[in-house]
Image (cartoon, rainbow, N blue to C red; front, side, top):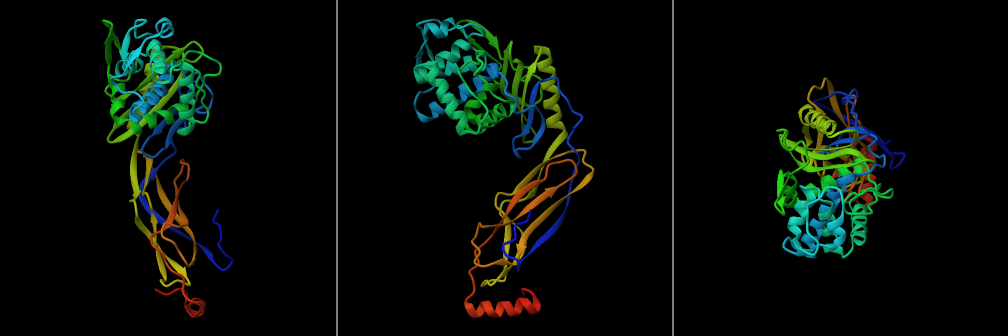
Length: 382
């Protein structure tokens, strides 16, 4: 809805025809996963979702957060990749997937990270947590604090491994949020997630991510499985400079996890493309100014605008610019004076703030009277 600044000013709506096309996203697409979310990272567009905000057991996808927190601590200088961590009895004795660390031995942070990421070692996750925070419980507190800081608003962590606990949960949307932050905040360390194998204590183990060798452009991230959570996977892939993040959970077998994640990742990378509609700082329109030292002010899109659209589009997309004109002076550069609404059949409307590209000072009292006469007789001049 257009908010009027004053009764004297009327809303201005301009339509721009665009050569880009759009059709409804694939509403017929489905998955056997209980929870799912597929996201274009560049534009933040959700390409597909199913129960994305349902609380679920993240299982070993928890270790994405464990690694992210560890990377943060390395970056902050709390530990280094070369820090030697003593392995406790608790870490050594933990069941489930293992890195096979020995009680009382010392293992570097870097090796523990690979044990967490590639081998999905519960023992490695506990050892890493204890090395950074002293106790796994304290590390879990750091995980929860970090989750709140990055916008994971429906997650609760009780341990570093993903071991089942009724108070340990997340959502597909939160795991996707975490995955994007991992990739963007730690691009160098993220490369560990693409490593296909790691040998420790003479035990060679393969990365459990089934998509790494499928020639899809996938470079991470992490599988998960518990009885309560089922089989899950967070994955990310790149094609033609587009990055997609996918989160699936609640499947009944490894084979289903592999086939469903491959199908949805290929669909997301193959079916869509990104289009730049407006460049950062591009002048979209010159709006009339009331009682200003200048009669017009340029309207810009500060950060530009890129949209994700299906390739097999049929309907023309339009961009609608709306503002209350004439805009009363003074006008400050960067001030929001309107918005652009991008509309197309089958996609959610996209709204982008329209900002003043420069400042316009107000006229004096005499100028104000003259402007009033001019506007009443002729409208605002050039």
